[in-house]
Length: 105
Image 1: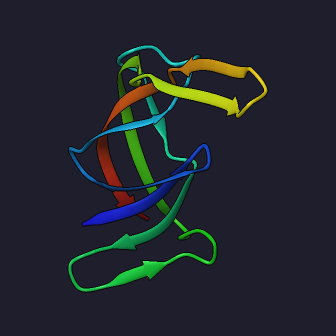
Image 2: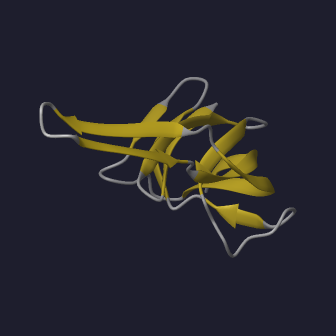
């Protein structure tokens, strides 16, 4: 069984036991549990439920493992012949969570 969920605007394909990186939740500490915002698709052994836009009664539970920062992305801007150069870096925060349950009521 797997599900397609949407968490803070990002869509993920998850199965029970998967460790996923979701956008940063600053109000959750390690060990806390939360539910996915939306379940868009739910695939079971013999059937597939596709939401319009969400699957009614479907629920995906996650448990927070910790927080971190992704690898650095370098942003470089330049205009030729104008002596214009800008260099910036960015590291996106994320929350790492394990999928503890995929259910449909």
